[in-house]
View 1 (tube, helix red, strand yellow):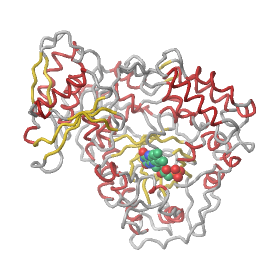
View 2 (cartoon, rainbow, N blue to C red; view 1 turned 30 degrees about the vertical axis):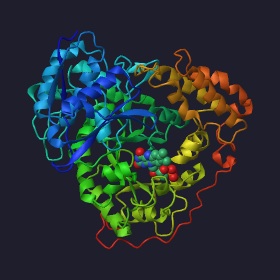
View 3 (cartoon, protein in one colour; view 1 turned 90 degrees about the horizontal axis):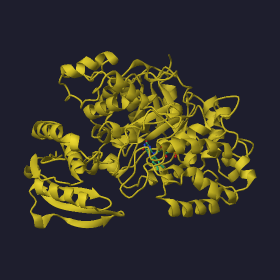
View 4 (cartoon, rainbow, N blue to C red; view 1 turned 135 degrees about the vertical axis):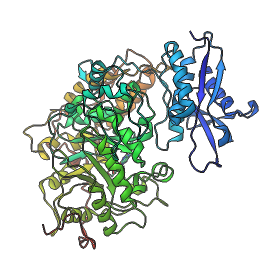
Length: 621
Ligand SMILES: Cc1cc2nc3c(=O)[nH]c(=O)nc-3n(C[C@H](O)[C@H](O)[C@H](O)COP(=O)(O)O)c2cc1C
């Protein structure tokens, strides 16, 4: 029990020092603990009691808005409180930890270290909140309040998770997960003594990073990227990716984009929420978003021990939060030198995982083929070869992005697709590998690109295709036959949707509630989260809509029932579907073509002429 504890509030401001800005404290659902945290933050900022802010509802959440305060008031503050019997001590510490991380150094960090040294033993176990980090980091994940069950890692219910590596590191070298030394500062002796567990990392300029990355992080080289599932925020979750893996052994799977700040400001066990994945899900690519080489280096180092096969930099997201306020994603395309530096910093810290790039063919008025070539040439010079192809890899979303004027959704449909530019890149940069993305809806198209069919006259050969929305819209139709048709395997891993569901239920049983339970009594992840990837499994089949309605009803009824898992929901609802649907094999006309999904039908234009500047490697070689 605490007699006394400290809440240290330290915020960094961006923009000019004289600017004012607003602090938003989010809490959902409202509770005494959260209110007190908001109130204490306001006190620490010196906001008078009357100006504690309005409570407003926004997007289904209660939000307390604190009015603008001058930056000069955003200093480290120490708030003494009596703590007798107060259950929210941990949460206050969490907020303090989050805030102190934001500053990372100086008075707040020192006070925080002192405070946690005294108080951590009395922490009520709450995980640190990401509230401040996420509200101030564009694109970062919204906070979720729940406990983290540190025990549920490694091998859970027969599913082996990548976090087993972290556990091995913990066992071999207790305390290896120290807060990173500030950039450019040599690690303390305690940190450097852990280096013998793996090669130390270095920043691009040679400064030390902690040595925590063992050599054997990655399984044997996976197959070439003939087909991959595109990164999609809120869609390509660990659960959806696992479903995809059950459908295809060889297809590469990209995570949702993780924002660098989210990873850098998240504590160790809680990182599992963002980064852990079942070992079976290899080959997997982690996509990161950010534009600051130092922060990206740290985020990459934090992610490296999970052993992703590649780490990908997002240079294609046009959303205002990302490309506007955050100045990363597609906003990076006009700045190839910065991207080169970011890639170099990531490469230095990726534990040997190749760093790849996903980009558009242009942004706003930086949309000539020459611009694109300069981008590829500059960035590729800092990239490492992939283990499968021996060349650095770009995933090209073959349409430009218009940052002003089009919404993210429009930016995925309105600008015309120019596959010929991807073929021209393959022609002009034979030392670089290219995967084409955008508007590819059928396995047939993917198989053709993988076989090199349809390369326009004079164009280079692409490695493969990346498919996004079509996989989400019809996972069975696109992926169930992929191993045979795209990768030339003798058989597909699943014999029917029924077989798929049986396997997926095993995963769900091992995964539900891995991260504890929210205060409302929902498991994290919940049955609803785990059911989400299944929503389009029966696309176009008789009674598919009835099934979805039944699932919705069942989820509403049993949302908080700890005894009802995915298997139970399926048992209660699958009866509306016929055996013919459930037992239909992959291929055999059951692909999405059968449901009327058309090929993208994009006609190739003329190849653009060779770039006017010297290419990375002259095409004649
Ligand atoms: C809901 C949604 C979320 C997306 N999130 C990301 C992302 O996090 N990172 C990224 O590089 N692209 C993202 N994209 C873009 C896709 O990766 C892909 O480039 C785009 O959808 C075009 O491919 P498709 O026509 O096969 O869907 C997203 C697309 C959608 C529809």
